Amino acid sequence: MSSKMKKVLLCTMCLGALFLLVNAVPAYAAEAEEEAEYVPALFATFWALVPPIIAITLALITKEVYSSLFIGILAGGLLYSGGSFEGTVNEIFSGGIISVLSDPYNVGILVFLVLLGSIVALMNKAGGSKAFGAWASVHIRTKVGAQLATILLGVLIFIDDYFNCLTVGSVMRPVTDKHNISRAKFAYLIDATAAPVCIIAPISSWAAAVSGFVEGEDGLSLFIKAIPYNFYALLTIVMMITMVVMKIEFGPMAKHERNAEKGDLYTTEDRPYANIEQQEDPDSKGKVIDLVIPIICLVISCVIGMIYTGGFFSGEDFVTAFSNSDASVGLVIGSFFGLLITIILYLVRKVLSFQKCMECLVTGFKAMVPAILILTLAWSLKSVTDALGAKDFVATSMESVSGDLMNFLPAIIFLVGCFLAFATGTSWGTFGILIPIVVAVFQNSNYELMIISVSACMAGAVCGDHCSPISDTTIMASAGAQCNHVNHVSTQLPYAIVAAGVSCVSYIIAGFIQNWMISLPVSIALMIGVVILIKMVNNGKYEDAA
Image 1 (cartoon, rainbow, N blue to C red):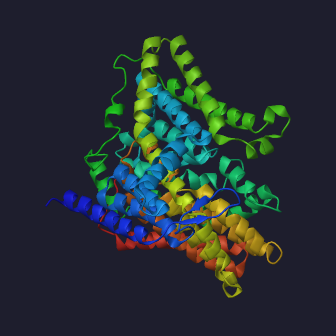
Image 2: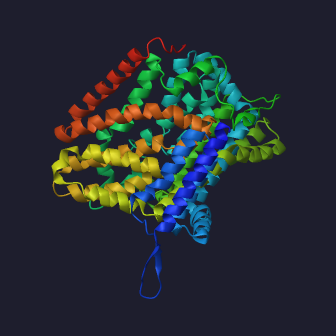
Image 3: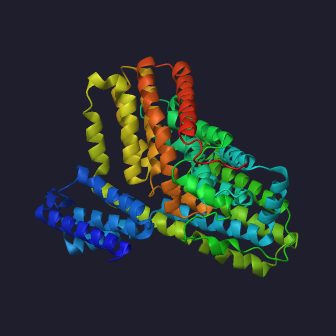
């Protein structure tokens, strides 16, 4: 029996056991005055986290993400319906896939993906990406320089994590390919400068989301005060830069980098974006400006689109407008005008014909199909998990923490946030669960500990989101780097775990010291020390070529 058949048989047996289990538990219906509202028997129990755990485990074992996500959704449907065939099918499709594709915010993100994919296809067809790669190969002469340039661009584009992932990916991909940086490493650099940067940027869609979850406090002010305590975000950036400068790789990433040095940027056979790359017109007259101008116009258009949705042109100030913005609608508006400007630019410069521009719209859509499919399945899994009461289970568990562990609470909150975001694939949902609880616990007792704990919520959510294969940001990073998704997750995980471990220790220190001017330098020194220790342990195992 082949290895794949064994894995399929194992999955089937697990689902069969799960089916028998849920059939043994009677479904529960809560009686209302006029009609009954269905509540699953396993609502708000640990079982609510089982579907995402199944999906994540299967994805890491089988290296196949589509079927793993669907099996997770199927398991959630079985648990929700109590084993009923009809109820399971309804939950998978009506409550899951159809429901998430009917959500305006989700549809907006998918439209943004398609529009941005079309812009990238246009830049490739026009030769702008190729020209920029040639220019960068002259000015960025080392592998270290290419990685640092990627990190710098990721830090500069702090507006939104989706926008960050796809923009940095399209701009820097020719440069990293030129210097034989593996797609897995490129995806890590993108992912590590997406959510971790957005969560410490006061003017970003993430700051707006966090501020909205704080009740009874000035949300933006609290967000700014929590930045020095956001250890995971800060330490991820420190770790990333230190490892690039010191030329350190470990875990599965080392294998990918060794293969990249030999010319194989992918390592594995599955290359979902490989055919998209060969889209340059051999007769193109594209120059660097054919990439730079569209990107600049795209950034400006997206900023204007976001503040427009927040009421900036109706009298609100810039910060307030950004805080109230609808990222989904704003990014769609911005990317549409970015696409329009790009087409007009290429027609005026006679770089591409109108017919070729229109062909790029279809090419861009095709390029984003893998990301769209994974996002749809990930959102459906989250919907099923929500229906099982995962949020209620975690909230109840958090509220039961006693006062004896008060100084350890930031570290505990960080770990809970990591687990919840990893299992559900959403950092914003984790904010919504944990931040109101933390504010309620500390609001009238210890303000500084409340700031540290709120920051621990954000850091834990970003960490779990960073690690999770069903996270939309992780999926976007894979799409931006045009990297196999499971390859990205498996190579990034050891790096994220190291940063998470140091962050957890840092929150224990901060919980007792309660002063960022002491705890932050100590945590940075600890992070650099761990990286140096890793280099010593791996000395001789891997040498990164400049």
